[in-house]
Image (cartoon, rainbow, N blue to C red):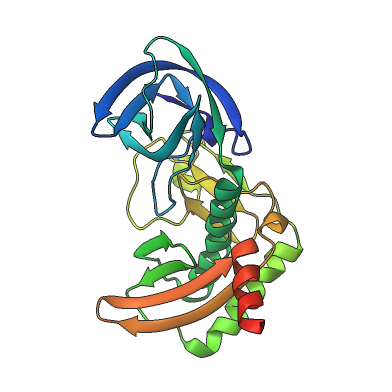
Length: 238
């Protein structure tokens, strides 16, 4: 299986990998490497983009445990290729996903609710629930999440030993078999997660909750973090 460099090196922006396969698909090519720092679409977090050699990476997905890159030009099998991650896109996703953990940690701690859906859109992050969060509590939840940013807490991503896993009170919507990757923010959240995160909460910068409303399939909350939240609030002010 592909060695996934992003799990241990979320801030890695360039790497070298050996091309194991290159399969044509219309005007694109699906490329398999022995190692990759490109994050694939997973768990509500969108894929990375960037370059493999001179070819643009337009999509990244996992198939049978391997990370496949959809690129705009063929790459020679057996050769080593240099990869470059679009860091602005990656860091935005890290801010959004880490911010979502702070918010969900507050919601779980106050109400015991789990989210049933999570998606990073072009402008906002949406979190879906099967129960309503009282609108009057949104300000308190937002303030508590931002307080965790001000405290600049460490964000730990690790695989605990199998014997230790049963004693860890991590959030999860379903029972998970070992190994399980746990993301922990002390005093705020402990959750099973395969996403890419910031190293400290201060890097999230800002969390803004915009709404929590009922819709036909349940309840949806909208939020934004970091640079995306600042940009949206600046546009509203203007």
